[in-house]
Image (tube, rainbow, N blue to C red; front, side):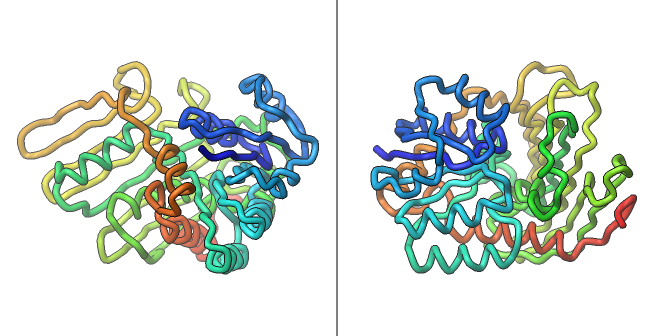
Length: 337
């Protein structure tokens, strides 16, 4: 079995990745962050039996560690990943895996030179049972050939919970680089695309004129030889919603379509992971609560066997690159300067 260490806990995704690896049988050598705060304390409460370390980068030097996990400040994830790969470790990162094209180029070179895995945990797919079930249905031909995905990623801002770096575009990355990387991942995965072009993109500030550099709205249009994709992300979820965001995905096929209401069903069904299938015979609701999540067991197998089952390496590169390119090319609207 593999051993992992956690370098950087600046987002709750760190704990979700830790939980996934532990449930799959991995061992944790320790966790730490450069700026201990509420999330670090929360991690200690959630995993009281795991060792906290004062200098998390020592985990990169530890020969017993196979995998470095990081949800550090986004702009710092590339440096951590490169150091880990050069030390002979594989890497699992929260999205975004990096924030600039220069960082991505250096990561590509490092992967080529070291042969290590650089994997981004696009949690809105790999942690979501309805998203896994959608993939199974598409592979079984339930809706024919996929033509288009429409991915919506709304989030609640909760400004009182955000660290100062969150509002700094140089440190956090732009909204399409960050949030929309999930939906880019889904577009590529469900259409079976290995490349795509950004047809159009927009970023805006509509709700926070006091922070004119901050982007609370983003959209993009993607096209590939295999399909089309529309993506909208935002920080505009109202407080009346009982969860952090009404994340949805519609997948259009030649013989039907799927709609995923991942985190809440406004029609009133309790819980998460609501999936609807419409085909030539019926409209059907599918309960996905018991669907197995294969990502972490597959990732452990990839580390042990040097395979790419959990996520193909080029997929992580392509999804990250498209999200960054969409931000660089975006039309700026609203209160943005």
